[in-house]
Image (cartoon, rainbow, N blue to C red; front, side, top):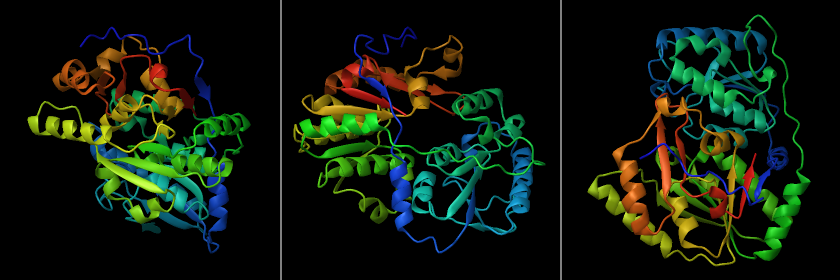
Amino acid sequence: MSNDFPPVLNEAKKNIFSIVPPFYLLNELAQKSSANGEKWVVFWGTQFDNLPQINEKEFCKQTNLCLDYIRRNFSDYRLVYKPHPAEPVIYPLLNLTGFDVLNERTAAEFFVFKNMAKIKYVFSACSMASMTSWHLGLNSHSFWPLFKYTTIAETKDGYDDAFKKMPPEFFVSDLSQPVQENKKVLIRDQALWDNFSEILDKKRGVAWFILGDPGLLALTISMASLIRQISPGRKIGLIIEKHHRWVVMDMNEVKKHFDAIQIFPRLFYSLRPGKIWKQLLTARTIKNSKISSEDILIGGGAISLVENCFMSYFPKNYKIALLSDEAFRVCFGLKDPSFFRTHFSRRAFTFSNLILEPLLGLHRTIYREDIGRVANFGRYQEPVNDIYDQMLVF
């Protein structure tokens, strides 16, 4: 496929809005639970397998220095090491003395939401969960400046780009300095409230959230809480694109926040006949879903098969894309020529774009893989704000 991409956005439409997520509602939910006076400091582990050509010995050596820093500064706190779901359990080169290792294999962001009343500080080497924790209103820090030398340039550049909008106080670059509080002040976005009040007044059906990444559950639950405050009694549904990260989730905990849940498999681009057949079956099932024209579809602007099917097969429904500024920049921002040296295509992507998606009546997509494995690139071929009635960027 050509790298001469068609227009990203329909500039004539004014339907892209910057919002502040209602994370303050999560804090209100947390205050209702009992923390029993516990004070936790959480360190997120690292998915070593997803960092190509990392110097593991140096990475672990630097991690141990950071763990020492936490031990020195938080002697009267409960220290918690939360391994990444794909991290070898208690990585052998780490000194975890004084830390309780919690092998609860759940998404980090949902773990934070459940334990928000207990967690006082969050740290990591380079986990995106630290960034999410900061946005949720916690004291949260990244030691990333101390780890850049341990990996290759493509990975370093990818993380630098992912973190570039974080404030300086988010980063710890000197282990001799004391820890600083850096809580983000959470506010109510009145424009967001007014916007949803208008939408919910026009559309009386179920508000369906389409979710592939369980790491976005905290955001989704906060938005569901907002909808319930504006429209008491409104049914909230969750459409899950299931993959390995959902396997570790406690679905009983997830179900507490939704009135209905539908589950579909996540299916990647593929040339294998068996996988193509599964895509055909999944598309047919979604096309026959009982979605009322009064229902609201809230996705992430993603090009996954599941979200694409819902956005393609239900033209009368009001559609909202809810995505981070980082995701918006990666997928819909201008691309420097250097981008095409670090992202590549596969034949399966071309097959899907030229044959499978037109056959299924889906919006056609563009996809590129990141050599550094930090952020793959994907978007619809047509302007994304022609597909969604609104795009809400946080």
